[in-house]
Length: 630
Image (cartoon, rainbow, N blue to C red; front, side, top):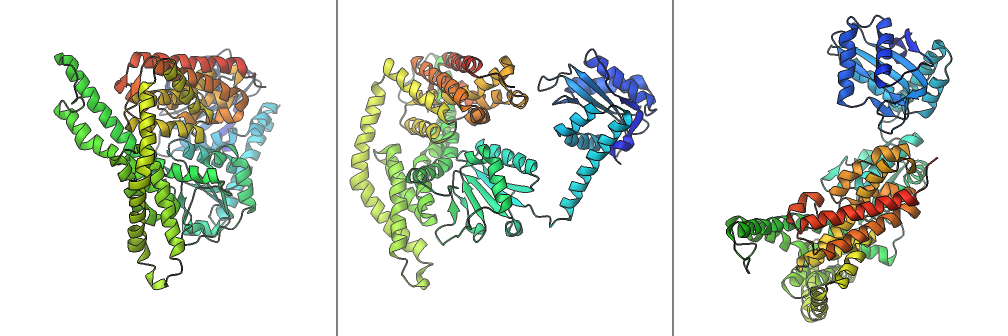
């Protein structure tokens, strides 16, 4: 069934007028009744209004599609009305509605109601289609516009079905935390492919695991594969195929360019060697980019242990804090294990999980450098740092030390007979690697880095007053500089390292600095509507949730669209929030979670004040600095 078949000419009104939303609905229902599709007009009208109360049926860009599925409908039908002057309709983008399609569907098993709504929604996303509908001077011309657009879509769908069935372009997206960048890159690549008329399939490697995994047949038939990642992903499967390797941020900000290149096959042929089975995505890695990639691979695998273990430890302290207050007891050296529940959370579960932090960090840094043979050697170095005096800094050194040590052994023993290949990763590399790394950690890294770590901790323990505020100002601002990029990650990694050393005020300043940008942008899209596009205003409120959940990356699309005004605004607000957090003496023992871990924040009321002040400062600057959109 085609859309034209459902549109009775009697149910079409061109150049209509409506005072408000209810008036528009009443006129649309009257048009529907004129087609004879409705047996009880009042019951149908109430059904349309009830659906409207659930959520507005305006879809933005001047279009609304009210609808109702009811026993009062005799057969499926459509009514349409154009309102050139526009009518206020509670649209998500705040724009008046100029085109309305009303759907009537009988209460039967077939889903005509859903199918028509879906087909109409797709067609109405095309600005040219809606513009042609508004230009129509007669009902016949209006129907012709609808029929032409639907035919074009059906022809395009049919041509795609006749193709091999394999996507033209493939992509892989992944970021260190696997929370936001991974899926934002996926969404932008999909949009770019749709705009270019290119079929695409995207494999995401996020915090919940690998989804939509690419198959061997799809890889064999693709014109090119886009690998937009900031951590190692399996690359051996792409051997001999054209591959574009780039940062995950490029998948967000350069999606149209990447899709265009991939569709044309404009990419180098990837060659995988025995030791080159994974990649971070950089086509030409600088020394700094390589180090960052290895570090982020370690951090991404470390985070689940830090977050889960850290929150459980924080809950243990919270339970003991409540216990002490209820019984008038002064906390002592056993605080955190005073009650059975706290002792279980801290000693049996959270503490054990948190104890894996440094070995996992070092192990996966080494894994990133030397593949699987480096993993065990890195774990050993990280464990020695955790049990010694070098701590977090020692684990960082151990990861790189172990990785490059094993890499040297790989090259050193590359000329051994092929018959010994199976022996290398299970005996030669781990045995010699552990011996060398163990000696190096014990006699060089522990004494030197341990002394540096001790000096750093002593200095952090002494900071107070202006020094603490300055540190909070710096770390908070860093969280907004690139919103998930190297500067942001440097501040966060430093905070998690200091968390292990017991400096909980630093983690509090860093997390609040990362929460400010999305919250400020969400508020600005509401308070300063003229400074944002319709699409930005529509997506803005979602950033409230992302900000409260400590997902700074929600602000990236806005920063990418207007970096000269958005970045300074966000940096200032984040810096203020971080400084106030330090000034108020706020602490946080959980390394993630945003508002969900506020119960374990030290001085929570002041922490919320700092968040509100920082967000308000950024929001106000956005309102002042950003220019009105055309």
